[in-house]
Length: 104
Image (cartoon, rainbow, N blue to C red; front, side):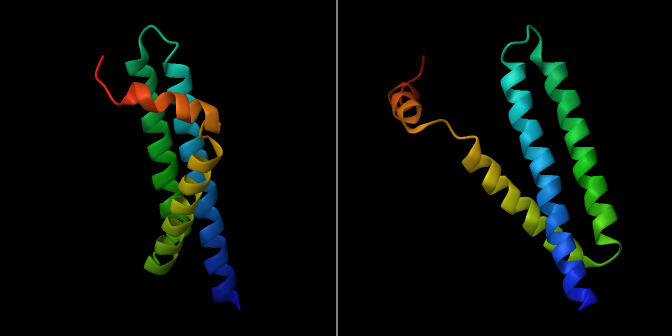
């Protein structure tokens, strides 16, 4: 039973880390578009998000590759969830398609 609990905790921690990482990425991209100089903003955000995720993976794994793999599985699941939750509504996606087919 303790192994099952540790496995579930690793998946949940990975999902939490993924949610923080990908929600932070979404927030950064939306804010960077309105900045005069977005590059430093994006760089600092990337460093913070990566250090948080890697540190979290290190803590969750605790020297066990199985926990690391389960944490990564939760991270990927969070990516899928955040991508699905932050997609534009259907009419906006339809309107964006013709513009994406040609170069400016």
